[in-house]
Image 1 (cartoon, rainbow, N blue to C red):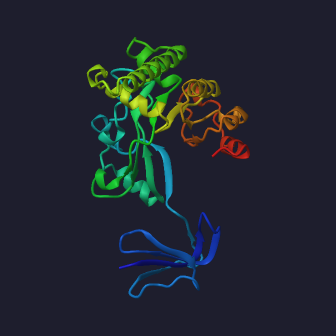
Image 2 (cartoon, one colour; image 1 turned 30 degrees about the horizontal axis):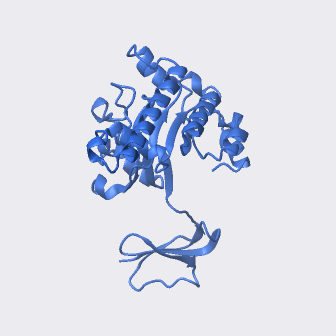
Image 3 (tube, one colour; image 1 turned 45 degrees about the vertical axis):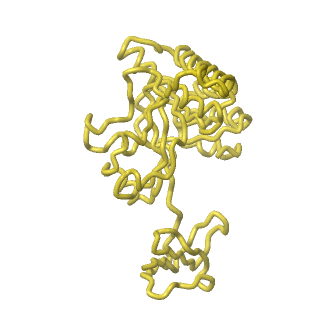
Length: 302
């Protein structure tokens, strides 16, 4: 049975706000029609919801979450966000760690968030591949929209703490983090060149390396690098590496992005800002302000 929501203010991407709007959702769960009441034909037998005076918006998308890989209210058993036993894990897939029964999916859906980007955590300089999923479905195969959607990298406090402080190994400094990332990108670039050089000589092809295959996706521009960075200086490091290796870059968190909006805009780099309303639990968050989204928007950064 089609579902019809009518009589409210319908917010659209292509027509602005439609007053006395109608949204028709077909039997397949997809939006079939949007428009004014005098434009849209209501299918016979529809389940009609009167929404006069209400505001009807498209489903929200949260581009950076750990829903499903850091299962809510479960503890260590549901915590699959970081494989912190080693610092370089580009071949890991967040999708493999998703638990579709995580109550956070239902809670997100109830808040109007219909799809999310699920990323590995930020313990490792190179953490793994993200996935886009819907917040509803019987299992994660039904929920999957696309993967991979990006290669997670992390700069700053988290890799320093996890590897340098807690595990007494490299990297323990910001220099070390950047060095590890560059080292593995060079390895992947050389791997890719060998594959191209010997594509007609199978016996000379390098053995398949899952880490380098994942990095190769980023080097080819098939997926962006999702760079966890809070400090302006860490964002500059991420942008420098992206330029060196011709990577597509997205800045995640961007806590101090308001300090360098001109630089970010000059490089045409998008940003996923936030969260903005949690406790400032570490030094990197001292500069957090609600001005950041405004500053980026004023420079045309999306």
